[in-house]
Image 1 (cartoon, helix red, strand yellow):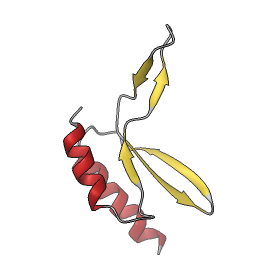
Image 2 (cartoon, one colour; image 1 turned 60 degrees about the horizontal axis):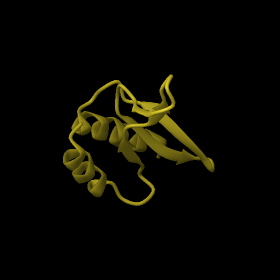
Image 3 (tube, one colour; image 1 turned 90 degrees about the horizontal axis):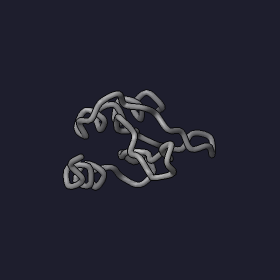
Image 4 (cartoon, helix red, strand yellow; image 1 turned 180 degrees about the horizontal axis):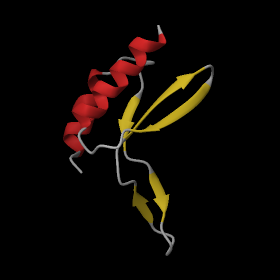
Length: 73
C-alpha cells in the first residue's frame, strides 16, 4: 500500500467528487484487515456509495472516479 500516492490522488479530488482508499474489515481473529483492492466512495442522493475499483493503482481508481462523475452530470 502506497499511502503517499493515495493521499496525493485524494488531494486532486474536489469536495463532493469522492474519496479513494482501502476499506478495513475485521479478520477472523478480530484484527483490522485492509481490503484486497482500493475502493472509491461518493454520495448519490444522500446515500454514500462504496465501489470496488478492482485495482491497487490509485491513478486507475482516480480515472474510474472521474468517469463516474462525468456520467452523473
